Image 1 (cartoon, helix red, strand yellow):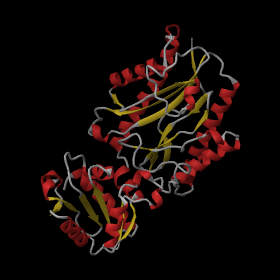
Image 2 (cartoon, helix red, strand yellow; image 1 turned 60 degrees about the vertical axis):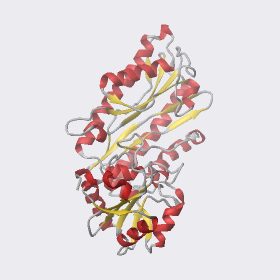
Image 3 (cartoon, rainbow, N blue to C red; image 1 turned 90 degrees about the horizontal axis):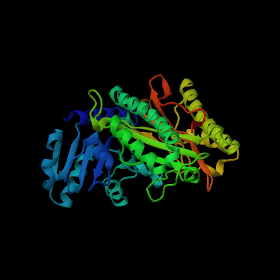
Image 4 (cartoon, rainbow, N blue to C red; image 1 turned 180 degrees about the vertical axis):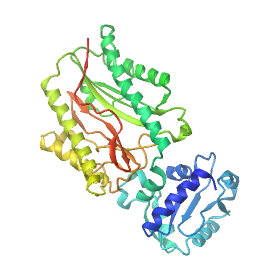
Length: 401
């Protein structure tokens, strides 16, 4: 069996045995379930429905169309071919005959969009074969989203470059203030530094001055950008991973870093900006403290609990109406990955915060027509507890002019 698939199978089996799940049934049709492809690797030009069955008590099996049979040979997994829909259903019935509880990419009531990948009709089909379907949400985390040491190293290197780059970007503003730099100019500077440092990012960064900072994902273009001036407040959110991997870790297994900082163009931060900044920093640190404390006490947290802690802190300081998104997201091969999100707001993420998974913690306060503040750090759950892997901003960055 392909080594990377074998690793997923081994970890999935370990999780299922501990949680009374008889098997994991992954299904895809033309890219509707990216978790299927995260498991087997990218395979081009698969044109028909395909299934991967990972049972707890026997070897995995593929069910694929006769048309696509040679696409999967390199995986080294026993494969059953189907020609008609009737035959496909028969193959499914055969592999599920001894199963009672089956995990699939299903989220009750669609609560977790990240793992809600199978359509209602497919769910009906599998249930009609006499099995109970449960969500694969925590199984996905355990089997596919935990980092090894090499992957962690790629994240740490990328994150160090990101922190250096955000400071360079603020200094670029100060050094060029007389030339009237725009938000777009700063974004272009960051993209050029990424190229020089060997980082890859498919989009971004966010560079937002004043009222633009109240849009959490403001995308500066030449047309939408404003000139940055003395007295401006600048939010920068940037994310990237190592383009060429590192050591024995190939590019496709490099892990993202993702940070957000804020700065003021001038010598003294206005009182209101400082108050909002301090509130955001306090909420960030309250969530981090809860995470660290819970590990020390032997308590396993769910994603929504950290969101609630940060939101409580902001609510208590009367800015709750202006914190308009979840607290954070998982990090991995994608900047928004398939593990737990810190979310009790947009969804209710009941997935557990497991060791060797990374998340962002990024509370924000956004005052429409004025400015926004977000502070984003990354945190990795080591065996001895969660630790912040990126530099914590403790005061607004002052841009000298």
